[in-house]
Image (cartoon, rainbow, N blue to C red; front, side, top):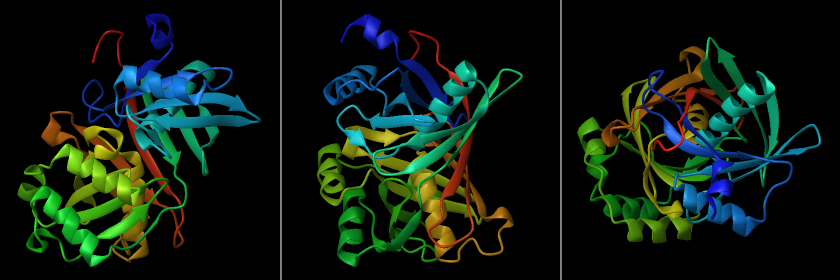
Length: 290
């Protein structure tokens, strides 16, 4: 891939924990028409971030596709936040309609005093109980047992635009100790169609810590995962966990164990299976920076 082509990709950190720190890097490519699928895959591999989003005008909105270094992803939250920030910079703060391969979503980008932020509304989000044998297989992947699980939040197969297995752990120490074999994780996640496995710990009813192994895309761990945040918030709403919580919202701290602090805010919209609004700040990554 030539340097000229790669220079067309903007680099943006999404869900930053502070104005100039943290955030999950995403590539953002905007053009008159989407490149060929093989070209997008090659560009995402060369960029090397967990995801790169490609966007082109379509009707009154935008056609978008997301690629990890190894495969296409149906929906990516942090890349959508990054896209919203770039659109706000280049076309003005507004709400933009996006058409993914499978759903319609929106992203609202804002610029205030040079500070970039965005908020996406996910595809419909919901979850169902995960089969016990599948839970045991996933626990074994990480060296966990059922004694490590938080009984208040049963394991679930959840979706907020992409599929995830959610495993809630009962201690922050167990979450920090997460380790697994990348090849074994890739085999399991691709077989089951999961974008990530969302490992979470509830510090309080509204504050979660999360880690997201992303072996399906060839990435050991994702520092901030907006699609998984949507899936988690939708699932918690649907099982009644978020009942009586203000605004049905949770804050998610992610990336700390990677040294890349990230912060996501997820608000479950009313109604079983309804979308989730996921918000965060963003910053441009200077050319040549990581």
